[in-house]
Every structure is written in structure tokens, then in C-alpha cells.
Amino acid sequence: MILIADGGSTKTHWLIADSGRVLVETLGMNPVHQSQEQMAGIVAEELLPHIGEPSAVERVCFYGAGCAGSGAERMERLLRGFFPNAVVEVGSDLLGAARALFADGEGIACILGTGANSGLYDGHGIVANTPPLGYILGDEGSGAYLGIALLNALYKGRLPREVAEAFGRETHLTYEEVIGYVYREPMANRFLASLAPFVCRHLDVPEVARLADEAFDCFLERNVRPYGRRDLPVGFVGGVAWSFREQITKAVERAGMRMGPVVKSPLQLPPLGERRTPPDLPL
Figure 1 (cartoon, rainbow, N blue to C red):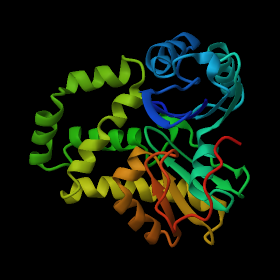
Figure 2 (spheres, helix red, strand yellow):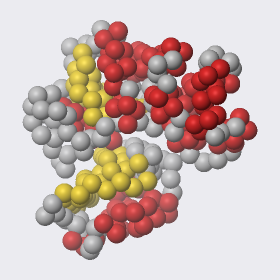
Figure 3 (tube, helix red, strand yellow):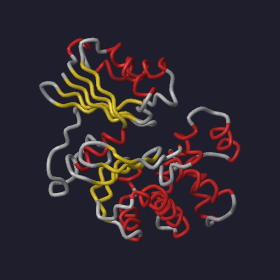
């Protein structure tokens, strides 16, 4: 049995490959934002019921947010504790995204989900990375960034009244609750990213569409342009990337860059013709 995981701050997808293939979704696992106890609880309660006998797992490949340096070491120790007979490999979510998007070809891999990241990929590994800086200092184009932009425009009166009314009707959130979630509760990035679907549903409103356009233009300008490789395709992975793929395609065109494949998850392959060889995620 082999496990391949795509770990994000909000959700983690596990591909369980044995006699067949099963895709399991659990809560997000990020060693930067969560304790060992929190992550262990997710594995024990949400993943193991789908595994059967953990000792039967021969290999675990975890590509996740926060899985670099000490974060990768923490994740590796956690997984070895649950799967003692397995070879455990931990890499960044960016490397997993790049391999899924471009296999052994070159490209610029971008993640747009709860957070954001990008990297220059040479067909083997990430050779350059613009620091995303997280949702407070950066993460342009992410779900959290869109949530911040929405709330700022909403409460500062820059959106039409019908949008403000729709926000209250659809989210049932008051101003006081929003402030509480952002400044007094843990995982504010998840809360902010949970508002991105509202933005997506109201793209027919010019003022809302402008928020999304500005977010993706900003992501490309600050994170992708510094690589100086307009010759390479720019590919995207993540729930935000998938939901806003039409807006992102236009943003890439405005920036004079080459559009690459877009997939919701690294475990979801791009359509045939958009890639040359299957991804070799376990390596």
C-alpha cells in the first residue's frame, strides 16, 4: 500500500493506492500552524479508518504546506510514528504541484488555495522561489488575500448595496463576528479563505470582479515576474486557481506570460495534451 498526500492548510487529500485507488479528504495539516497533537488527531481520526492495517503501508509521500526545513522533519516524525514499516518522504507542496503540472518539463508552478506560493521548476526540483510571506505579509492571489480584499471593500463602502446585502444573507456574519474570527480566533487564514467562494459567486458585479483581477495581477507581478522567464508556461494548482481559472487566464495574458495547465489538486491530472508524461509524485 502506498499513500500520496497533498497537504494544505484547509484540506489534505490522500491517494491510497493498493489493489485499487481511493481518494480521502481530511482536515488540513500544516506543521507551521499546527501542533503535533493536532496533526496526529487528524491522522488517527480521519485517515486511519480508511487504511485498515497501518503496518501494511509500504511508502508514504507527503507534499504539504509548511513542509520545508524543520516543518518537514516534524511531519516526517509524525508519519513514521503511524506507519512504522513505511518509507516516508516529505516534500513541499510546491514540489508536488510542480511535478503534477509539468512532470519532467520546465515551468513556473503556482499554488493558489488558502495560501499562495510559486516556484521555478527545472524538471527535477524547485530552483527559485519568491517568498510568499504568508497571509499577513503576502500570499497575493490566495483565498485569504481575496477574503481580506472583500472585507476591506465591504466595510469601507466600496461595494454596491446589493453585494453587502447578499454578504449578510449568504454568510450570516456580523461585523463583530468577522472581527472576532480574524483577530481573536486561531487559523484566521482559513476563515478569510472561506469567503473566497462568495467572491467567485458574484463575479458578475464589476466591483467584485475588479477585486479578483487586482489580486491575480498582483500575484503575477510580485511573485512570478521576478523569475524573468516569460518563455516558460505558468501553471496553477489549488481550489482558488480552479474556481477562478478564467480570471487567472486573463491575468496571465495581461501580464504577457504563457498560460499553463490548471488543476484543482496535484492528485488530479491535467487534460490529455497539456502534459507530456505522467507525474512521478512518489520520487
